[in-house]
Length: 193
Image (cartoon, rainbow, N blue to C red; front, top):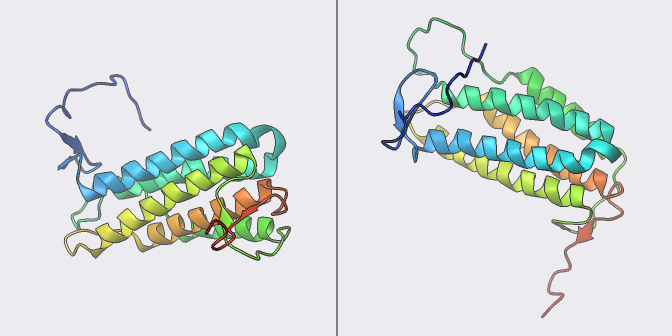
């Protein structure tokens, strides 16, 4: 269980932060950047939920699950698997979480109008907020991929799949709240030449 009694500790005043293992890393470290960006995506989803809570209860429930899972993902990234024995079982993203997001995508996608062009970020306020969350989730994914390329680092392969699926879900959810794609704003190549 998490227990936070004191919000400021002054331990980060030197520009470092503690990982779940107790190791200190610079706040600019790629791993810290990755889980910080996951947190940012989660905050964007929180803003999107302001718009989904009333009119889209099914999507709002899906987003609520994803928000909780994104905290799991942050914990996964904050406790790197360095091969050393631990006193506890670290929290990791598992295939069931990815599978649940895929089921949600499939459920929403059944009702969508087929795409005839790329979709611009916009439409309803809910859709615009979901597109913003999607772009931040994609940035988190790029950072996680970059981290996984470092031979001294380890990134859970399922975590990479999960964040990829979350951004896919956010795209589909944005279309769903845009009247199942009918209110999508479509890209018109070269329109303003």
